[in-house]
Every structure is written in structure tokens, then in C-alpha cells.
Image 1: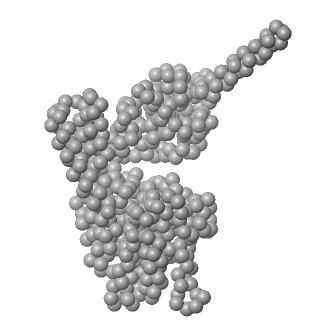
Image 2 (image 1 turned 90 degrees about the vertical axis):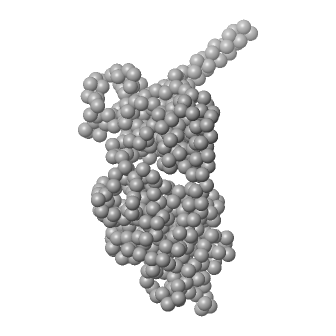
Image 3 (image 1 turned 45 degrees about the vertical axis):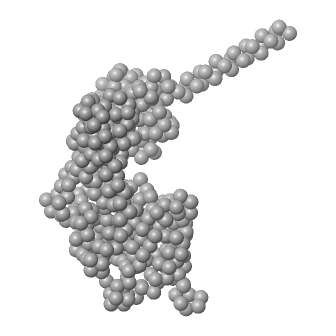
Length: 471
């Protein structure tokens, strides 16, 4: 009996030790803070830490130079890509300031640990402890690729740059959007099968038009122009409203109606990502417009990606997720996508579509039918049928009226948020004066100001209290 109990006891002890060893093996590696996995991480060019309560405030993270935030679940991909134990083959001697890409800060509660990220000329990547340079781990670059880290952002110049002319071609290199229109994404977003994507961003040309009196210190709205022809230049008729609303416009050359639909849509998603890398843009204020086949493509992007586009202005061309009866029995204008569902559908109903056609436009009958279908489905949509207008662009005033209507909800939110931020900043000054925000209440008030109205004067005042200023 005692022998049996001893055997069972020995077995349990062995299992317990094995379990503990396994747990330690899984947890071991470079991604540890005080012996435990990090709650999150962030990447920047230097070892200067950012307080944990500020890492969810985009204006602060940009001013601090943070170019990538890593959530807890993303570390599983990094762990698979990295060696568990430090290497000891002398590679650390090849690591220097010239090979350092960035610093990865690991965060757990109030504690932070820094890892330098290095890449050698042969493409090999390494992690080195910022505190103990002798500790070096090899890591496969695919780990960072999997979680969407782009190293170009580590060395990107500040977006506080203007061009001499208001119209110009963006210089290469361009940046690919994290959204890739592969078959899986197309099925999920469009419930359809498009032709296979053929993406070579190095061969594209992006054309930009800056608004009058552009100021780099404040994020601007974006108008994506989808041309029906190979000429991607921004139509002149857009300029008055772009100036009034303070929007950058971007188009793509060689991306007209003859371009395969998958490549065509992908180019505009990539153009937004590239623009956002060069300029401060308001991602809650990205709109899409296009003419004829470009208008139909604009509808596809709006309905397929309501999380990217806050509204659309399709001109003399429109698409939707329903077949549209032509008026002849048994004949329909086809749909290029299926009806969105779930969270995408809920978000679509929060957006606005301001379509424009003319009484002499051959697409007017189809647009009128599709407009009524979408209106009956609960979408916030309007259709301006301009008397006498054919299959052409509208006037500046006619286009401007539609875009202004589409943009109105966002502008209303911005005005309310700005007023509230001013009130909070005044309340902070009254209560705390010029004191540093040591108390949790003070920091919370400042963070709320920045979150409510980023890049406005109250937000600049708040970030200065927190020790940040414009780069």
C-alpha cells in the first residue's frame, strides 16, 4: 500500500515538475517583463519611454515617434519567429547604431523593458537587450510581417512637410495597404469573386492636390478620386470645396475603366496608406468619388469598406448589392457585390452617399432605381438629378453641395468635440493652474482633451502639460 502511494506521489511530483518546466519553456525568450509576458508593446526609434496611459492617445504616440503598437495576442507570432535562448556566436559584435532599426518597448503594468531591433545587410534580424547587450536573440522577419509592422515608418520623415506646388506627383516608394484584395478578402467584403489581384505598387503613379492654406499641424480630410480614364489628375471643379473643407485629394494614373477591378480598387486603398505616411490625415474623414465607371467603383469601395470610407459622391455612375430592374420585364442591371451583413452593414447605415447624375445622363435611370433601393434599405443617401446635365462632371457648386452634405456629420462631431475640449482645458487650468499633471485626475482630464479634439489648440496645450510638443 505504501509502495503504491509512494509511486503515485512520485508520479504526481514528476508531472508537476514537467508542467512547470514546460510553462517556463513556453514563457522563456526575449519577450518578457519581470519574468512575465508583456501586456503590450510599441516601437519607436529610441529608448525614451511613453507612459502606459498615453499609448492609446494617437496624437501623443505620433509626437513621441511611436510607429507601431503590438497587442498581447500579437506576441505569439513574434515568439514563434524568435529563438527562445540568447545566441552566443559573437553576432552581437556586428550590431551597432547603423544596424538598429528601432527599439521595441515591452509593457506590463508600470514596468517597461526595451529590446533593440537590428537588421544586417544580409537581411538577418536580431533582438538585443537594451540593458544587457550580451543578450541577443535571432528573429525571423516574418514575425513582424505577420503583425503588420512596416519598417519604412521607422525612418519616415515627419509629415510636417509641405510641397511648393499644390498639385504634384507623390514620389516613390509607395506603401501597400494592410488591406489586400486577395480572394478571401474579396469574398468577405464583396461576397463575390473578382479577377486575381496583380499588385506592383512600384509601377503606380499617385497624383495629389493640397488644399489652399494647408497646415501640416492639423489632420486634413481626404478625397479619393477614381477617374474613368488613365489620367488620375484631380478635376479642377473639386478645388473650391476641397479648399473650403480643407481636404487633400488623391488620384491614380493608369487606373481607369479598362483596369481590372481588383487592381483598380487596391490602388486606391494603397494610395490612402501612402498619403497617410506622408501627411497627417483624419481617418474618420476619408471620402471617395468617381465619374462613370469610377463612380461605380466608388460605390464598391464605400459599401465594401465602410470602416475606411466615411462617405461617397458617385458621379454619373452607381453600383449596389441589388439587381436593378431596367423597366423591361426580366431585364436587370447587375450588381457587382453581395449585400453586406453584420458590423459592416451597421456601419454602412451610419455613412452618407451623395450621388450626382443629370436628366440627360444615360445612367440616370439606373442610378434612380439603385438610389431608391438603397433608400428603402435604410441608407442615408441622396440623389441630385441636375436638369440638362449629360454624362459629364457637374459644376463646382453642384459637386461641392453634395460633398459638403456627405461631410456634414463628421464636421458636426468635430465642432462639438472642439467646444468640449476647450471647456475641459479651461476647467483644468482653473483647478490645477500651471502645475504638472501629477494627480491621476489631472492626467485624465488632459488625455480626454487630446482624445476629444486632437491637433487643435486645446490639445496642443494639453500635450505641452504632458511634456510633449511638435516635432
